[in-house]
Amino acid sequence: MANDNNRKAILVTPEDCIGCRACQVACKSWNQLPGISTKNNGTYQNPPDLASAAFNIIQYNEVPSQENPVRWLFVSRRCMHCEDAGCMTICPSGALYRTSEGAVAYDRDKCIGCKLCVNACPFDVPRYDAENKVTKCHQCTDRTTAGMQPACVKTCPTGALRYGDRNELITVAKKDGFGTIYGENDLSGLGSIYAFKEEPKLYGMKENPTIPSSVVFWHTYLKPLSFIGLGGVVAAAAIHYLAIGPHKEKEEEV
Amino acid sequence: MAEMVRKSSVDEVLNHWILAGSCILLMITGFAFLFQMKSVGSVFGGFNIMKEVHNWGGVVFSLSLLYSMRHYLKDAFEYDADDAQWFKVAGGYLSHKVKVPPMGKYNPGQKLYYLGIVGAGIAIAVSGFAIWLMKDNASVMLISHLVHNVAFCVFVIAVPVHIYLSTLANPGTFQIMVTGMLPLSEAKKKYPKWMKAAGKM
Image (cartoon, rainbow over all chains, first blue to last red; front, side, top):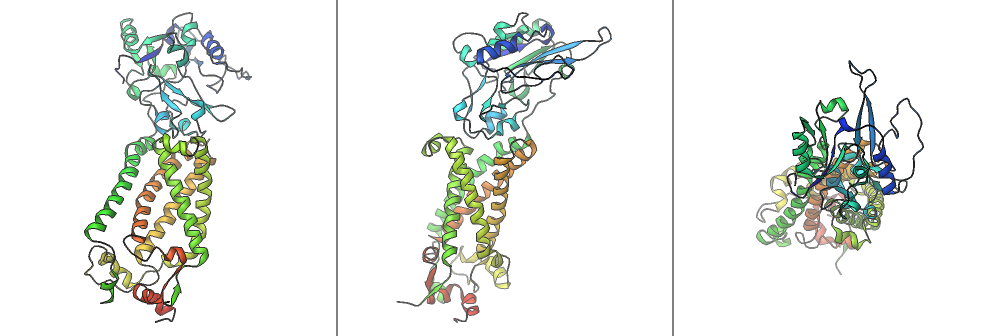
């Protein structure tokens, strides 16, 4: 689906981000999330991390440069909406699902609180709320299906957040001179993509994100093995019964 | 009526069916979780309740598995020359013409099956409790998830074999696990070494 014409994405251009956190506020407002009381721990970044009441945050990366000893590199962080989504793969109850726009959303009622998705996510995104149900950015699927933009994108004053056709966003960003589109191909293509002129690593982006190998192994081999294994032994038993037949007591007496 | 001998005690029969029942329930719900089978989930009234059934079914299974050790564990570790010969003729299951060596109370196939169930059972129980109770430890969760599923594969392959061999493949065997008894004449034929040890032959 990476090249699917329908797939939408949020394009983040960290270079254009001024760290105003309007996206955080808009997200809270639309999703009716409560405030979080936090402590000042020596950085302007607040809240410190994604939380059940914070589906997106601006990461304040302090990366001093030659010309600018107090340089901040802002990165708006949220669920990456991977095409190859570890959370969806491992979820045993079907609570995490793909929307028609290509985002990964969740059905709170279906969540059984097993927290497997938390451990299968390459980006440490899913959070559990007080009732032990999964929460995360769902790319405002309740807005986008109604033809609106996600709340964070709608409110962004600088165009650092843009929402639209994924292929189009990538083409435009490349035309604008952004050499690296983070997430263009990672995990078969992310739904939150980032336009960089510099190395994504400088902005604290994870290099080569992957689903844990144990989850890949389980999905690729163990799942089919359990099914084929069960069918195989049942078939083998039936063949044995017909071809060789049950134990006969009389022959034993000889 | 023919003289009967007791092969399985009452608590053994009872525990076997608790173990078997919980095991099959766990396998069905396990398959439903593995393949997100909505229809199976609906039978339990949704995946949330099915999770509770699976978790507490696991508690029953674990206790039952521990209790079964007093019945089978000692026998399962004892093998002799006849057992080696039993493997050479594949227990007589691949041909009715071969001569199967005399057996004791359990044949080595049964003994190895039991050890397999104990091994996979402990693995699936411990990993299951870890997934249930240690959700916030990422590496424990991922390793347990893997172990749980490997052991699951062992179960879904081994258990149907056990069911087949103890019913259709060996007529008369199933009722031992119902009444615990079998006719003396049959016991002498099937388990001569056990009967000799018991002084009935």
